[in-house]
Structures are given as C-alpha cells and as structure tokens.
Length: 110
Length: 111
Image (cartoon, rainbow over all chains, first blue to last red; front, top):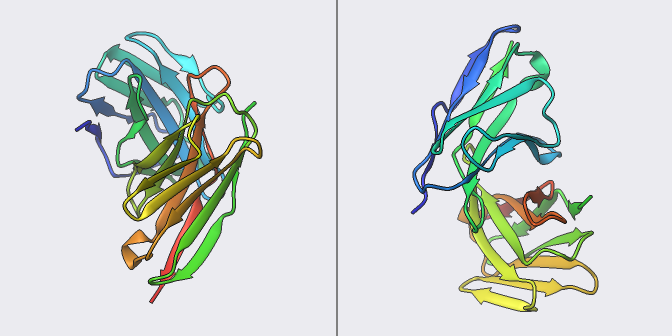
C-alpha cells in the first residue's frame, strides 16, 4: 500500500516566519503534488514535480516555493507566512495511477 | 480549463440511499474518480470509473457516468453514520497530467 507521510498534523506559526512542510512517499512515484484545501473552494494545486529537482507552478503558487532534492521527498516552503495562508495543506503522489494523499497539515498563521 | 461542480451539502437518514452528483466540462479524462475525506484526514480513493463505462458497482457503491451530459454520480446504498464525510469528484485536466477536483459534497447521515 502506498504511504504518503506529512511530517506535522498541526502547525501554528507567526506572521513573517519561514515555514517548511515536509512530505515523504514510499512508492518511488515520480510525481508529487502540494494542494491547499479551503472550505467551499475544494483543492487548489500550489506546485507539483515530475522528477527530482523539477518543479512546476500550479494554480496558486504565489507566496510558496518547493524543493525536490530526493525522489521520495517534496517540501513546501512559505518564505514569509501570512494569515491568508492559514489552511489545510495536502501532499499527494502518483505514478500512472490515482493520486495518493497524506493526512494533511493544518497550518495556522497568527 | 476544466471545471468540476458539485453541490456542497447532502443530508440523508441512516439506511437510506445517498446520491452525490458531479458535472464536469471536459470529456477527455480516461478515468473519473471519487475520493472520500473523513474529518481531520487526507483524501482516500473511494472508487473510479473508466470513461468507456456507463456504470460500475462495488459493494454498496454505484458509479454512473453519462458522457453526453458530462455527469457523474456516486450512489451509496444503505448509508451508515460512518459514511459521513466530504466526497470529492475528480477528473484529469485536458493534458492528462493534473487532477481537477470539485469543491466537495459534505454528506451528513442522520440517525
């Protein structure tokens, strides 16, 4: 069974802090994704990666960056956290298959 | 681009059938998916249907696909309190690379 692990379930950060959200998958999937989920808006794609050191912008990349130094790990970085980045963040991975999701990180920026 | 629509809320009584509907704008998706999200958790793949099928049944779940109307539905028979969750419809975008999700339907099951 595919396992996608997000390092934190809950995070509370202050405005202006640099925030790292980590995601690891154990199925050697090439493709990894970061989404944010907000009520009534569904899932919106922030960034995705098709291979190590490759990254592509999704629909809402502003205020975020990513890092993919190893195939199994995909990190989301908030360079300077703002209150409008308070949200649920979901990591996912896939090969030629459906998306497999982690359990999410609920981030609160105060 | 691709757009996926769902109603946001549905309430049913325990034991009744639930029907969750989804419409999409592009028919190029090879597969169409239903995901379930329980409180505080990520999304879990519930079922999917190949685009050349009209119906797929999997225990209490029935997926219907009407390609002409670009309409997908998920029927849950004998709905239980454990089925209370948010259900997302998802299709692949025009390039077959990224998923496009509906806003999710929150299913509440009343005793």
